[in-house]
Amino acid sequence: MNKPLRRIAIFCGVLMLALMVRTNYIQYVRADDLNTRDENRRIRIERYAHERGDIIVDGKAVTGSVETDGSDFKYKRVWKNGPLWAPVTGYSSQAFDSSQLESLEDGILTGNDDQLFFNRTLSMFTGEKKQGGNVVTTLNGDAQRAAFKGLGDKKGSVVALDPRSGAILALASTPSYDPSVFAGNSNKDSEARQKLLKDKDKPMLNRALRETYPPGSTFKVVTAAAALENGLYDDIDAKTESPLPWILPQTDRELQNEGNIPCKDASLREALRWSCNTVFGKVSDDLGNQKMIEQTDKFGFNKEVFTPVRADASIYPEDNKPQNAMAGIGQASNRATPLQMAMVASAIANDGKLMQPYMVAERQAPNLDPVYTHEPEELSRAVSGENAQKLQQMMETVVKDGTGTNAQIPGVTVGGKTGTAQHGLNNSEKPYAWFISYAKTDNGSPVAVAVVVEDGNANRDDISGGGLAAPIARDVMKAVIDSKK
Image (cartoon, rainbow, N blue to C red; front, side):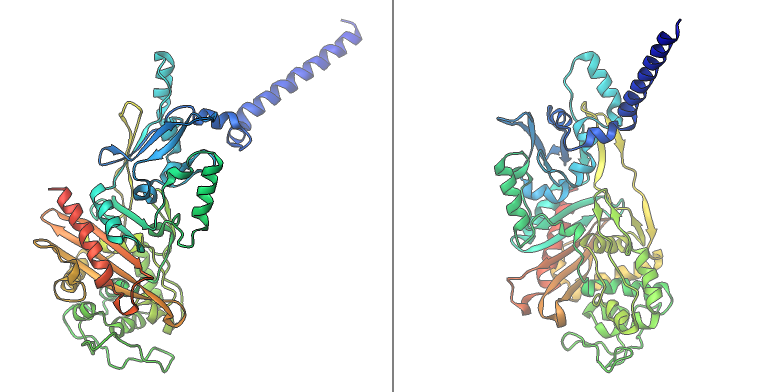
């Protein structure tokens, strides 16, 4: 071969090598990046070319797919009673992507997940059209409906858990929204979404998972747990060293109790029954900030929780002595999600064992065969079994003849704690009404509940955990118990 031809051959070889490198770089290195780019409309067209799998509650689909008109996206998502299930499912929109389960379980729902590889391969030979798989939730439909009915037109949230497994039975947030109204990609869909985003009541905010509130007096069960676990007190019926008045440390300010209640040297049981600020503020001060933080960590505070939908971290803060005393009664910088306070009630009901909350029980292939089944997982040991039973006795006294009598269910043992949390600078805004509880049957405790109500329309004097929140918790617990009969 003469010299010019050899050069041409080498040059062509280099070009071929460069082409091969470039092709492999695009196909294997940048494939995922290119597939997920917003500009890659082909991928989005393929995503909506077939019906999406469903999200299942009580064996029935709460979602569906319908054909669209005048769009190259063939199918769009619809919901059966969207506002009821939006706090659980999130949304799936041709124009605005997806959230919550619709986002986290997108691979299963579209049929693209690696867990469905065998089904996709088989359909290539059988000629069946591509289908998405299903996501089976842990939700109890009756409990979810009871939660929404109880909240009504009030702002608030309800979370119900099965203490024995961590399964989420209800997850309500009001006001809610219908994800169907912006599931497409038209101007009408865009306008509907903008209206929701601009709504001052924030219907798209998941208050159960993403809003933190001062937990108020419901937190006193955590402070009581810290007192028992650290040996500050061991007899729940013995007098505590709780004088009246009690002055907040490093201040000249008296910590006040609500009403004329018997709080001087009250036992832990009586202090929880009547919600004595002075007793639990002093307990928190006696233990100190670090021991309080250690106890709250055992209940799941100070870290995010994944259900698999992420819940914001609830915070028991590092703080000075007076603030730590106030945090011990659920005020100051103490902040908790409704999910977190349901976890507190759940751990106590489950004899101290805190289970990881979850809402996906199973993933199914299009033929309904399971490709994943959740196994319950212990998150922590919040308190000893002995101390959990003492806390149960205290909480059951609250419901039997204390501030939580509105949560009573005939023939069922119920434990609970009311809370009315201060809100705004110097308590200038209307408080939040809280209630946490659990119900017992012969087979342990099948349900623990947390309710928070932000009722801006109620008279300030009418806002209380026992008055507003306890009846909602009662109805949710009853719905769970009745559904298992």
